[in-house]
Length: 166
Image (cartoon, rainbow, N blue to C red):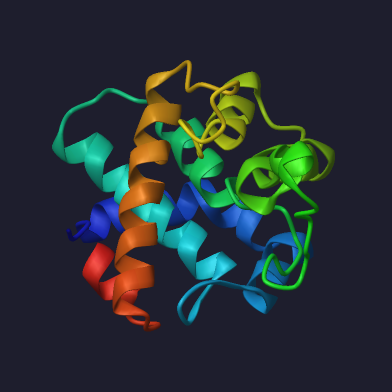
């Protein structure tokens, strides 16, 4: 999955405003899957989402798609050390269920994101987060791209998963 130079340039232009923010750069401090940082994972998801949209002619809003993908895991904590499981009664507080809402709240506070971008972020773990369904094509694309990147990053467990994803 390779983006052309023109596609990479377009994606960089869309994300430039966001990537320069210290809060986004903070995602480099956390490991997501294997040896891949949360920042690199989100960049992988943005690239794969952009690729899927372009190659399959899905007609998604590329700005919302790229921004939602970059910020989909904008929760800003190390989920490996945040123990939130205290029994089945609190299962929805576990990271897998709760982090989309933390990411969405952070993105709203820092960037005042659109409703479409909010849906992309809050629904990216669907169907696990069954109450937060993707309601637009951009959210479906990011949801699928996230699952693909998670598998590649977790199974191959190395930093160069970026090269494999796109």
